[in-house]
Structures are given as structure tokens and as C-alpha cells.
Length: 346
Image (cartoon, rainbow, N blue to C red; front, side, top):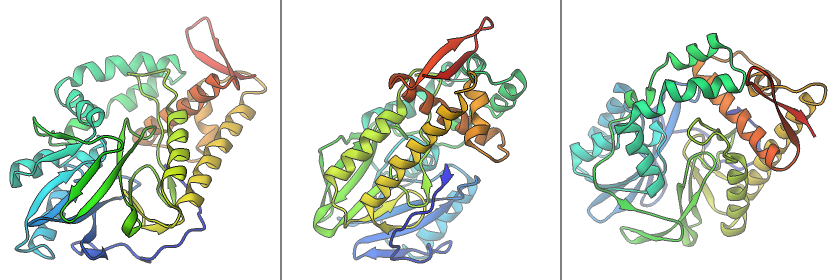
């Protein structure tokens, strides 16, 4: 994810401190769980339900996140009950503790079907989605053998960062009306960052739970992976942003998966669209003199040193832009004698 400055309005100047819950509006609470990454937190929201609180997203399966949950349940939520959980998408920081919460509190899970099924695939068939799939994928796009092995040496981190999902769930899909307590939310979904990420809109209260689709200060990672190497993930994401601008009012309070809640949805959507247009322009400029592989393009887009974790994200993000530009006729594919794909500006 990349830092962006946005002219937005932030009603909460600071996030909740560890172990503290902030009230967004009566019946909607917000707290944070720690992440061991450069992006060091995930937002968790609680929505008042019949007899307790519904949980929106769960956090990562780490001791730190479990301890933070325990502090919340023993402190601000002492004596109160959790009723259900809604998980927006399959990324570990959002679904990671779903199995733990389900087994500990008997919480039923609601989730979009593609996000649920992909969580199951990663849980039960990790070998099919691991190194032997990614090694030729990385090599085809110019990542050196040495860097490829460094990236792959991290292993199947998904299994270490999640507690699985329950064997039954309730499917939510685009256009559904989801009732939580006295409130009814409209379910929206969008791809690009994930497969079919769920978002919740409550027009009467001007609330928009945006998950990771729209964040204030960072651009959500939009990547291509080995399972779908030719996917136009960026095109899917841009279409989702334009649909949000058409279907969700400008004056909602955006409650994102990371960062601070903010006003200015349509402004931020425009900034994100422009951000990706600029990245496509940078790739086209880099490919005018001679063709470049995805690995060779990464330093043209990311101007800082990247560790193995960040390299995987950066690689996938650059490929997402390349695939989008190929589909739009802005780049031409050239494969060399060694089987490496490179791209020339059209």
C-alpha cells in the first residue's frame, strides 16, 4: 500500500488507544487490533444487535490480537455478549480470528461466498497454492531465482495467520438487505483488492462501512496472483470505485478497515482513480525505451527498499497495472528466448 495525501474531513483526530472502544454513533463502536506489518493495525467495528454486539471483521491470528480482544471483552465490553460476525473478505487481518471467535463464543459467520470459499481453499489445499505454483509465475515475470526463493521462504503464511472458518456460514451478496438489531444495511460488494469484498451502507444514518475498498491515506493493494495470472484486477477495482461513486452518497461517514473514519467519499474515489492512472503513466514511460519485465518495473514504481513481504505485494501490484494496460492496448507483450515476459509501450 502506498501513501497518499487526501483533502478529507476526519471527525476523530486520533484512533482508539489499545484496549479502548470509541463510539462512532449510538450503537456503533470502533476499536483497533495490532498488526506486525508496516500497516500496523486493523479496524474492528461493533454494531448493536439483539442481545449484544455484532462483530465486523476479526483481526489476525496472533497472540497480540487475541490479547487485545481479551482486553476489550474484559474492559469496555465486560458483561456484554457477542452475537454474530460479519467478515468482509478473506485477507488474514480480517478473517484471521473467525475460527477462534466461532469456537469460543459460538458466533455464526456471514461472508460473501467467493471470500468464504477462497478461505477454505487456502485452509484445506495449501499445497496447490504454494511454492510450486508461484515459482514459475515469478520467474516468468523476471524475478531472479535468489529473490524468488527469498519471497517463497516465508512459506504459507496464511495458515499461520488464520484460525480457519466455520464449516457453515451465511452468504451475503451484492444488493442484500442485512438486518443487525434494529438497523438494516444494504450490502455492496467490490473486487480488485479482494474477490468480492463486502461493504455495508446505512443511508438513513449516512454510514458506510467500506472495509479495504476505500481508505483515506493509503491506496489498497490491488494485485494479481499465480492462480489467475492474466486477471485484470485493476480494471475490476476501478469499476468498483466508479460504482461506489454512483451508488453511495458523498456525505456518508466512511468507516474503513484501516486508518481513520472520514468524510469525502467521492473526493477519495477520484483520488484513487487518478493515483492508478498516474502509475499506469509511470509504467508506460519506463517501457518506452526498451521492454521491461514486471520485476524490472517494480523499482520504477516503488522507490524504497522492500523486504520479502513487501516485494510480493509490489510485484502483484505492478502486474495488475501491466495486465490492465495490456487489455487497453497501452502495452505490447514480448517474450524473450528464455521465456521471460517483457512489455513495451504501444
